[in-house]
Length: 255
Length: 236
Image (cartoon, rainbow over all chains, first blue to last red; front, side):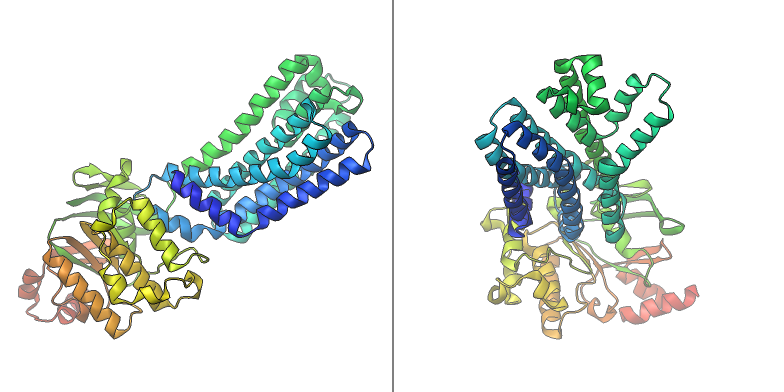
């Protein structure tokens, strides 16, 4: 398994996109901290950008990479390797390189300008998001054989989680304003890892004015520390569930 | 060595394999013959675990292959169309495969690499190779690890006459070592002196599996191509 991870990572490093992503994140971090005089304001802007860019880059890069590796996977499947190990190697190789790029690119400015608990939380959440969207990309590519369709599906998933989902939530809130929706809101935010990540960071920041509905409810219902544990646990489920589904599909896939 | 029992595979409405039962033993060299789309490649891919049968099972040395993957260490597979990562060089592919198969260099069989003169183009990337050269790489990889079973899907298609002769010589040599060889080919004149048994497939069904001697007797023909033509005619 380690060997395949090595080859996947070497291959990813060779095409330099991940390197460019890392440099872009670093530049972004430095410029955001320099624009805002207050580091916690800088963190907040960084969070908003990270929550959009990390899912986008992870899901698109991972799905294109999986389609481009179709030959590689086909070659390896006929070799004495376990399919589960093969698939896990691709997942680990991809999420490790994307996570590492984020860690270095975003970590350096954060540790220089705002090395506090919130900053570390943003780094951690970014790495988790890289893993989650890599797993979702793997699921999308194993389900659809057609490359254009698969990448289209990936873009739609990203659009759904970052834009459309919030729209639906707002719509529901306005429609059912008269009813107590607090508990239901928690249920909804569980359905969106991006939203959940925002909740997690805002709970750590403890700025109630910035919280928005879902994080305020989380704070009310669970209190901030248990709320964070719950959110973290659900984010981990978001990594394992798509990964497990894709693994099951890949195990029975005809190549 | 390999036993297939009631293997059935459907792709949507198309039945690619319909209730295949057969046994392949050590020392045999079996030719898998049949019209295009008769399920030959699907059957081979089932043996390799690349295609999962809908029902039925295949055993390799009495082990069910659906729960096993180690058995592939004993198989050398040459695909019909060799597909390799575009931006890897031949040398990198070879190093990677050796790394995965964990064989020491003493057990390696690099005869074909030398015979095909792949050493001279080791640094070329796979994307720049012609179809025939790719086939050479596939063949070299299939024989590289000295496997007990060789599965060759259209081995001579796309090879020039010289390379094709080199490959056939190699197959003859391996056959003498008593290994199981499974070949599919449309160029039947290639196979006359190599094979010992014939499996004939049509529309996903295994029509017969008998020895070459028996087929000669049944059809009264001395040449494989004529014997098969004879069989196909009588089926129509």
